[in-house]
Image (cartoon, rainbow, N blue to C red; front, side, top):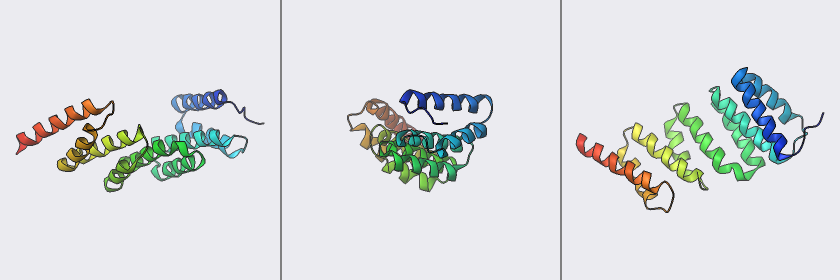
Length: 168
């Protein structure tokens, strides 16, 4: 049995596995998707999307090492996914409680829009750790950029400074 090769077919397959994950179990959805990945019948761009989704499923199950491996595979196959997979890898480290590994990974993410999302995640994580000055530096840099999030970043920076001045 060969898998259909169209973009619509892979998107339909991913939607079906999401439905299985929601209605049956993430494990069952991942098992079916991994079988499709290993069948060898998928074009590389589809294999990358499947690998990324397998990473998502592993992350949802708290299997962070496995998720990171799948995200690495996805980025290797389809380099355009590097920004997104780098974000989710950093997220795995954060969810695993490895904050000192997550923060620099968030800060190193490129290209847009993942770069901005990564910087914001790093700043928020720094705030939660009480490292307010380091968070402020990130917010200041983002606030100066011509990005849609600049106004929100400026508001957060002002609120953070107000909170910090009240505590002092």
